[in-house]
Image (cartoon, rainbow, N blue to C red; front, side, top):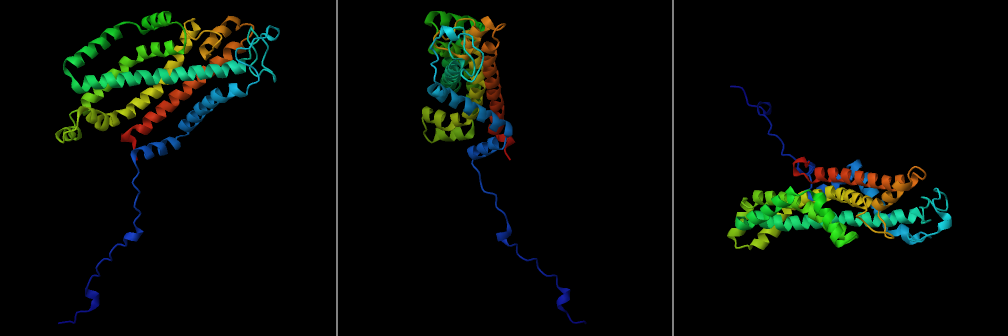
Length: 305
């Protein structure tokens, strides 16, 4: 019998050194959302433009040497120059100052006109979806009746009754948009209210208020944030349309829509009076739509790395 040597044994594998293993740090959902937004060039450019427009709307009229409502008949319809960067209108008012004051009104109406109907829709849609029964039936029948009426009809009636002004425009926009938001929230509430984590909260004695606002709404807010970002350009366009047909902001206060309405009367002779505010409306709406699309992708948990 031959002697057994060390070559007859297979050496055991060495234990893996855990110091060489790279452990991926856990990243929260919102941190991952911000990381994905920062890595998207379209989102960064769109948000930068929106931020720049907002800052100019706040500070540009303050540092401008001309008032937005200061008239000078001897300087009417001046072309853009070093003295009046965007020219003047038929009353000699500086268009640079009026464009940025109009940006304040248009952006404010767009933001409020997107947030207010979302709040109303979340409240009514959440109540209808969570409690159900006759309350759900009542709210949904009101929405069905309201959806049968063209939005332009009651928007026009609201503007005629309350008069022109930012508050009346926001109310008119809210009456147009809240029903779609309520339907979406109701559907999401029906989807989540019978989930395991909701039933577990109920068995532990959580109140309906806590279940809705602590457990269900956080799962819905991501989609609603995307809806707000998509509703802002729609509200800006609706304000511009109402102002263009004479139902919007009244002079001497101005908005981008009113500037387009005034510029349309002289666009053959002085096209800059129409094209400058029209360009701001178009590019701003495009920036909001692009950023909204990028935000939708960033908030989608199925696309998370």
